[in-house]
Length: 502
Image (cartoon, rainbow, N blue to C red):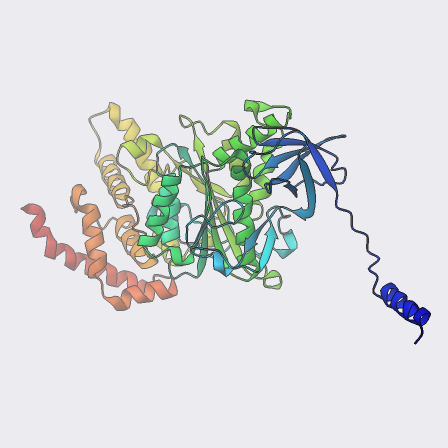
């Protein structure tokens, strides 16, 4: 081969292997930076929610698009960034790593480990923002999601795929309800995700310790954006948690996700919006704050088998000020969710814990997602308690009571007593059914009020294992089983009643 032929063959080979795809690395320039916000010029094709990279290595999300600039929120420190710093598009939406390796770990809002247990090996990523599943891909919510809290499972039942709001003032036990619910999922084949928004790092560490102590960390993931993190991390944390949950849901798994709490999430978004110079509206929140939470909570659902068959149950938490449920954010989230568990200050300080207000708490799924045994035994509970609360207020001004009123009050007091439950002690279905059967049928009328709670717990422990296994496995309370419980209760009452006289 002569020299010219060699040149021709090399050229031919180069032409065949030539990659004619054009690459366009669009870069921009920072024109202003401060308070975790960078105003960037030159990213003409940037899209809302896109991830961008600064020359210092810090990443950001495009959250504001103007005619000649883009507003970027920083997902890290602004140290080293200044006017003239370069920023480049990544071409992808902000995303987080997802996978089985996340179970048992504590991660930040970007899915990076912060528990000191080494890197997390995942092979898949999911965008934090995703359109919620459509109506065609959703199944009716009719499978129970047991919280293990008697007052909730009996009167405000939650189904798999439901969104149930936990609302109340500061320090009334909102997080405790969420933790007990997570502990109760042990052995239920449920993945639990706890999203901490704007909390102290010590609080999150203590919560992790509780989950670890009771063996719940084996099926739990903690996504933490603490008060020490910036508003951008607090803003994306619940979306990151939802993306992780959707991965498991798409694999046919059941997921429980707790957002603690969305009041701080709304405040973080308000901070970003005001820094991006968006118009403030009611209570200085931007006009799209309703959409902020609706697009998050709509992602919780139960899927049809064709779309994976999994479910994601959401328990958002909202903090009220002085019990004001008519404020902007509480009313927004109440209208988005499928019911609410309202915790009342007065009940909490009176020693009724969990301090659930029966009148204001509701589940819009209701008995459709309730175990048959609980549905049967708790039938009159809500009405009896409502009558009790009404009479209790009325009788504060009267001393002469007729016999029927006295009996109603005594019955109500016993019902309130059995609904008291210590922290980190969720109840299985069989125990709930036994206690409710005894209480709602008036079988505890002759038990002294101060001994009611201890009596029913001890009685439940004394029942034969065969009966308990039958209730737990079938989820129903047959007539025969009910009769067994009634007979056993009378016998047990005779055994211990001598101690009451002493």
